[in-house]
Length: 336
Ligand code: ADP
Image (cartoon, rainbow, N blue to C red):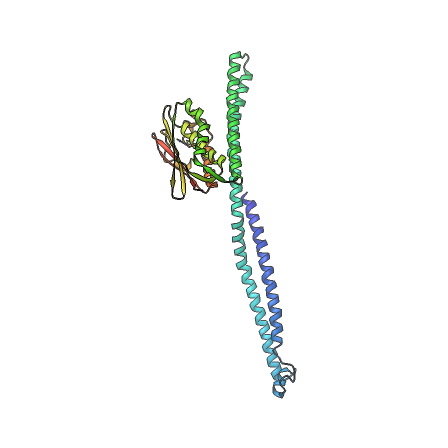
């Protein structure tokens, strides 16, 4: 990819330079032609002033005519020299400027392509893990001489679990890819509606862990996409449920602060170590891999999706956490 971009940058820079040079050479030619013509007109036609001495200036062969003719030729040469120097300087300065402009034009494209390549590689890696597990389990089962119906059911149950994981993962990846596209239409959205929809999405998993959700949301509205904002809040609530102990409480609050609405989700869960905190919004990042993989289902996509949605709304997500005590995630979105 690097090689592709360096050749593309060079090509684009050369194209810019060709345009600059065509323009400067063109202008120089026009300037030279017009100025040389003007210089030639300095000699008055014979008899223009009716005075013999002055007439000598325009009479070919007279010393004064030769003198003026020489001055005009010198003037033309000097003009030509200046234009050549100007074009040479333009060639060098234009070359540097063209390269800089080409880099500036291509950098966002390059960053985007690199991010996409990274995403595809990470996504493939995540997809391969459940597939490898499925393949190994089934191969081992096939190699067995005998398989009781209880064992077969066990394997099938395991297969279904892995397939569900795959299904969830692809659904999350699709959601993430869609959010990468242009933002959907914005409208005036009531914060209470977003919170209600998001809470409905996590109520089943929260009640399974007997987690109590306390929500205090005043009447506020923001300008945004309701479905995306709900997805962002679901990601925060889903994590709060996943990483909280049974019978704990999750607090959902909303408040106005300056030009923003802050929607916060506070849990009494595991918390996040300071070393992991700066990375939790990265795609596929999971703090403390061993702890997470064993105990909590997740792919490290939720927070990156929530962050993307917040940025789509010209807002951000803030995270504060105390290991062992809990975390507060705050969605900060401009007021409508
Ligand atoms: P995951 O699907 O693994 O939860 P996320 O992107 O939602 O992925 O979160 C990234 C990581 O941040 C998680 O793996 C977890 O370690 C950490 N995390 C997120 N929210 C919380 C929370 N409320 N409490 C503790 N850890 C959290």
